[in-house]
Image 1: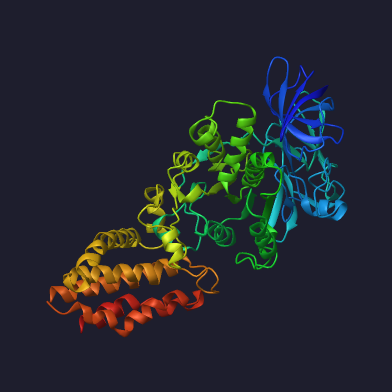
Image 2: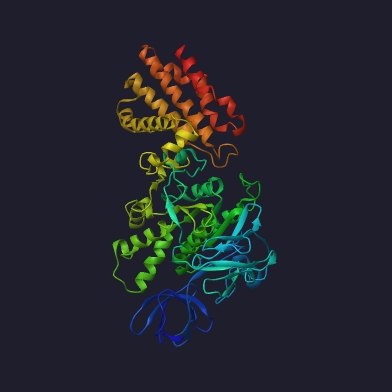
Length: 582
């Protein structure tokens, strides 16, 4: 089907003479065959969102429909590759076309000629169904890439299967379907980015995604398969927090989407990840990472596709049984792309000019997360956790993107510019943030850490809240006017803030803290408070304990290496015993 351009408005092109085109079909626009997607259909015309620079296009140029929705290629070759928002391979484009993406570049997302060593695991004669594994390719030392029957496959009996080196389009097996017809199966799958990949059933989010960041794991945890939002003003550390999660989170695969972010921030990611040592495998972190770089100087319309591209790739690895963490930085830039296209379509604007369907689009995206049993007979369990950064203008958390995101996600890590300016990082405000997964995770904490973990957490939160209430009184009347108990609360809360919650991302030891170490640290910090309460019960001067040498020992706990945790095991008891003797 071929139509012609009748109007051009930035990335929006209006075309006619395309009567059989469908919503979200991919079209090639103009003589240079720019990539576009149909986003509105009227009786006599269609609106096309063009994912490339439209300068130079003229009315009358052809618009050709491919008849297929915007899809991603799923096969070995995804890991370590850097794509743009519509899955164009940036490194291969640079090698073949130079530093800038030329208009109409038509390169396959994956290398169709590269040979991969396929190891079959399914026996000939086996009755297979959608989602069953035929075998695997060891894509990197960290990723065993399962070759699965596509989700929409009708299944059948495995007639033959071959071991050896194949490219992703060559048949590796032959399946005899229920009609008795032979169907060749290759490693390559294709999936529309706006369509959720199916699964057998969803599971309860009752296992934590361990991040190694103390304020997150202790106070505001996220479950595997959960959703989280990181809103904050400029300079408050959103990107650094996402980098930390990508480096240290307890996930098998990382999908990092730089959506409309500054080029230098994405450059940091692209330069760091190949050199960072993965604590899980000892290999480079990039060996289990897929990067999607859609920076702010790229066409704005491609931002809208980039998050869907990322979540579809993440679902593909989830179906293999991996725990996948997806970082979207930032969904505000994605929402701005929606607003721009909505304005060019002359739709009725909603709050602050965003389209009225902003909330439903955000919900569609975040609801693709979850911990699931994948399709197939092996009952593979996988999870997809989605962590989105939001960049509200001026740090205003009442703006539409933040508010619509908070209606969907269950974890809110609110960054605070005052904490950032005070050099307290991560700058997550412990009074505004929350997690709705805590009740789901209590059984895990009791079984895997200690039964008193929940009690320690509640006590820490209570002290921080009491500190907030007392600080106004201190500003008015001074510290000396407070009672001994109130002074103890302030000192204990200061210890929680400075000795526990403050974490140095660039320190070799402090950058990551295991759950065992977090438990021992928090127990020691709160043991100081418990010892102070005992001194008060005996009518002793509690302020003497504030300058005890043990306080310095507590402050240095964060720099204790993981292989020396045995030195921390008896510290809480030592604190109580020593301070009681004052």
